[in-house]
Length: 320
Length: 263
Image 1 (tube, rainbow over the protein chains, first blue to last red):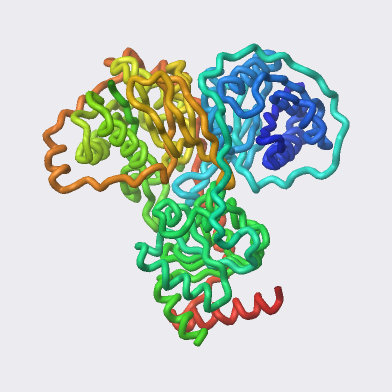
Image 2: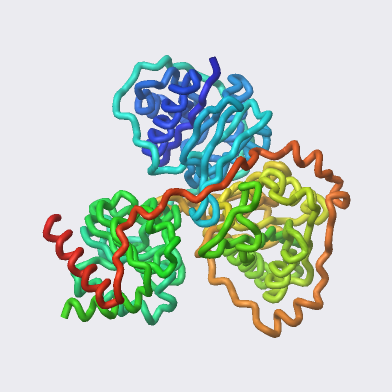
């Protein structure tokens, strides 16, 4: 029996919920492959997380104590490579997160593993593992395989797999990772600035603008439109990066998740994976975009293929 | 002192497109080529370091065919005196693991003090090349960097790394290092017409795999995956609101009212 090795992730003492999604993906893969599922917890105090990842379908939790409390790429690389060397897993899986971006490609390169990032579908076929990911701004999906690779590392897209709810009773073991020379040193975390601005995570109705807004001078009219409809104004990354709206208004992976939102009106937002991570769960997404192929339409309930300025102008007339 | 900046020409698909006959990529007739947005930020970061210190050279490098030279010229129009382009037909459809090895070959020749590159490219979004390059070189690396405090010659740089949810990590890294740069770290300058004109005269060294002591066969073994096929995903989940903009807006207002009432 082979093995699927999941690397759990944590930060500031909290297990990253995305790790539970990856465990769910691994358990689904186990059902078709017969491989056992092992979850590795690499942490200063692995006991803090070992119980949290002991979900139904997990066969083993392996505790890997390391001398650092925070993510440190050299430490993670050394630990994962040593685990891979000891166990020869068929698949190593971790969440497609910022931490994973910082170590997974190095692990794959050093181990000469097969590797695919941002994977949202995986299955075993006669010839081996097949993974599916997107290309060209989500307009296409690409199916990849890994001929000749004994071990394949996958980083798994977040918000795709539903975390398992039932707890299990896996074997709990320990693994001593080789000590790694750390070339980076964590200094501190900088919390997002408290601007006194509205907290978009609490907003029920959001009107968000994206690149389509064109220039800073155009932002105000959408602010007014949002106000007229009782919506909170949000934005995608380029708008915050340009300083046209504060970072606290940014929806997405590196911004905020609009947890309480019921209606999300996306104007001129094409729908990058990073943006959708913050609003994909909203039950009523309405998208207005010039590009009929924009990926936002794949998750929207209602769509208008058109110019956000024209629609906004007509909407204002509707309101008055 | 030298900063090497790997940059990439990315492909953008037309609104309507067809796949290549082998089904493994888009037919090139439907692709447009642009500079990767992330690399605008990494190149700007390198120029900022160059301009703040004396004696710093910034060298853009790309792995791509003849027309990828445009990306280098665009960089050189903003600053920097020379670029490097590596190509071999064996690099068509190359994996990030392979590109990283090629870039490591360039770094071995150039011996830079720092390498700055984009966190990812918007055509394939692998987010692998920079960190895989660091692994190939055995260098320290930090991904998703949104702040750099470093004076060339310093043994360490202090960085900000963007995490999820608006959280930022402050950390230090030993140099030389590979940093992958995130959007928003700076405001990239535009290439001026004058700069573009001047850039035409700047040297771009063309290197083959031979120059780097690499071969297509040895690189093929590094491939970390194989594309089996590409396909259009199922789309069209959204109910499209048709009509004139006035009709569309009227229906939209109605929907919002209904949804708010039901909420």
